[in-house]
Length: 394
Image 1: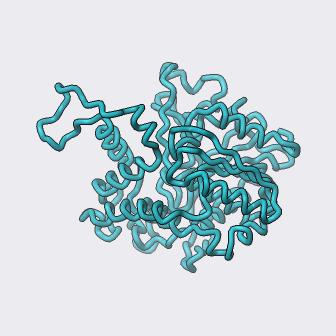
Image 2: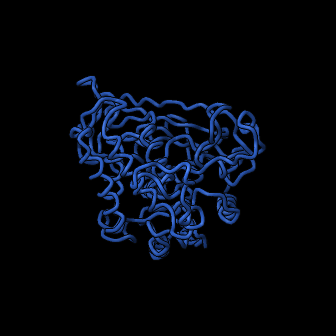
Image 3: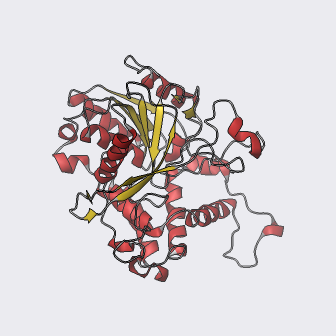
């Protein structure tokens, strides 16, 4: 549910975007939907904007599109570089590009920042036309289906006739599954990783602690704060705690252990940073508040909590009844946020519903974020799934 994979430091910063297999320099675009948009809860926006990026070309049949769905703290920038000086590329750059598992020589790749987001898409930090100030807590409650319906409008705008695959991890996996349920005639394949049909009580609990950290910060002001202001301390704490759930004990021990900072770097106070892991988490919190909106964090974590395929349809099997897509579900052994058994349950329910589904489980010790990190085994799974019979002509 994060996007903090560092770029490989092997090449000079000015030349990284020229590396073989890279999509190079990219620029985001905006889709402005001018008609009213009704949310599942009944509230209506007069229109909305989605910020998105595309890589590759749409073929003549308009059926080679691949939709990439981002996780909670991700955005539309999933591959390439915005400038040669960027410190790191898009959050799934290791997976997407010419010759990579999601091959942009063959596929037209689309990734949009979700409705309710804060990276150019309409969300709580966007100006409310009725007041001229950010919507804040007046923004309509957004759901996973709302996000998917907004992205369908974007695909129509781009002229996509069929989607070869929808791919996502964590929240992105929820979006991918919802795409197949909502638009069975449109979606041919779904690849959902490290995800679930509904969150456990523990996952909801972690989200609630993060929300309380934000809402108990006096600067939250019930969601009414100016752009660039707000509950920065609360948001940083929410990010620090959530980030722990994306990792694993083994990966944190390998990366940090109980190593302490050198005495020369130690602060005077007994409660300043002493262990390297403390410094890492504080860095995660501080960097997050510079790119993310606190109200967006509240809205999207609530959308995650309320996503429940079983409740909405009576059972997972019933929820998957409309699905026509071939589906691959991938779980990771060290993921304790959305553990393997939750991923496996999705594939089993699809099979019981008579659908074409496969489950793969990868042994890693990297935790929930395993789907973001470099893995030749994962790349082979993705490539093999996308290359099965029925792959469109570039």
